[in-house]
Length: 351
Image (cartoon, rainbow, N blue to C red; front, side):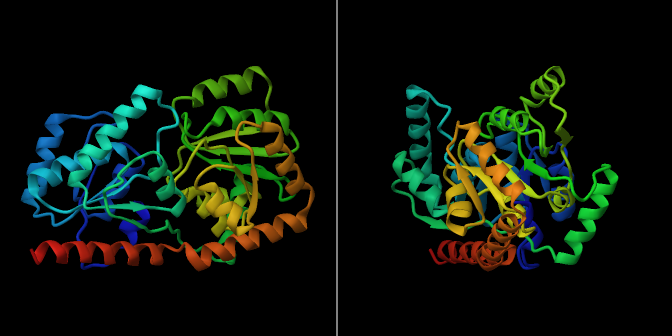
């Protein structure tokens, strides 16, 4: 969403309703010139929902675009009470952790409340197919608008690489495997830890935080895993990507992961779990290798092949970067989203 906000044309005034904790609260405040409505973090508040409806009416909001489950609930309430069109981007089909009853209840909620969603916006064809396979939003119109990221020049990348390695005391010959992630069930960082532990020849840099991060820090200390660095939450991980040689992700599922696209834009080959989202980016592009989810030894094998073969690493990185340049730019994404905004707004205005 941040990339979309940065690239929106001046003719579109964006208002953001979100938790205002770092790092995104301050960024959104700057990007929207203060047009931010504060929501509680990871919990629903009926009081906040009522206030958000009043805020949307006061600001004369023409259209609602929600991103993810929690935002989807708030957005549908606002859409129902203001009668404004609503788009929803799920950013992944998040049902893998649910039991039978929870999955049934979630499907019931999504399909019942979809009457207040005018269009689903999926970030990949794989995500769209996954939703259909799970019986979600079958009667709601949908579009596929793939994610996009900014392009970084070779000169900027090389300067950032040198500066970041110097600041961390790492020489240019060291091989760095980087992961940008939340530490939760979806991202499966326990598996990433097992891979790092089994592959001491490379350094592993992890950017992010989450519920499992403290546990993994304690494990690394207790088990003497010295090739793992926890870098925490960074406002801008671009320099860390530039300093790295391989991108690694163990997610259980994805929509179309921005972190992988950002790595591809830097020319990094990617080793990724063979799941939705990764297949579309890594498998089809030839910009890396997929490994079977849950088989850490296969991930180690893929990483070892790339660390031992400079030519293979460079060729895969170039293939991934070329694919990102051609099909996954911020401009392409923004133009498609704004076109959809205008079409929905015209349809409502013509009623």
